[in-house]
Amino acid sequence: MGERDFYQPLTMEDRITVVLYRAGIVLSTVIICLSAFLSFRGVQDVPFLSSGLGGMLLLVGLYVSVGISVFFIHLYVGKFHRVLKKIYYAAAVCLVALFVIGNGDPVAPLVKTPHFSALLLIPLSLCLGFVTAKEAFCFRLLEGYALAFIMPAYIFYYAMGLSTARGNVIGTGIVAFLLLLFTARKAFQPLHYDIGDKSAYQP
Image (cartoon, rainbow, N blue to C red):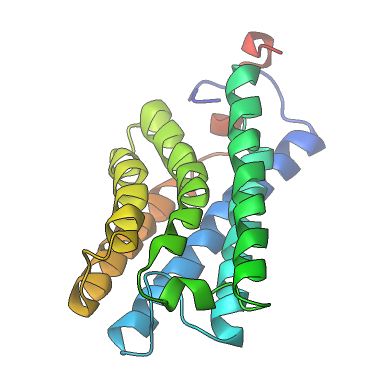
């Protein structure tokens, strides 16, 4: 991973895992951009989400898309991947907690004042931020570093009740723009970039 040189022919498994990894990134970007659009149109209750069935589908879809990237990411250091998966498991537990607190509507707790329940979104943002930071480190997609910092910081800012409705629109728009830029630069890279030198992988 993180190599532009072609080290070995790609197997079918290599191609499938890279495509799935990037599909997760693309789907995450589509969901957040859609959320930013809805926020701009004034039908959004909280950053990234709207209440009701539509919001629940967006939220669950975001968890699934980020999970796809987490499980199919290619990392030379196996320990990093194990840590990343543990963070995602914590994020999944947080999603279950949102369903329980919201009596079946995971978005409901996020729109209540105070917004402390939004802290449960931070593990998910850390997972997506890890993905973008990894790509920033490997391929100089510097917006990935910005996303890794902005997403959890923005959610914390909202959870503490420091964000206004206008701030939600602006913040979601900034995240969506950076993700769109990031995805446009990442999605079309040659597949072998993500595999790199297989002999360098560590368990």
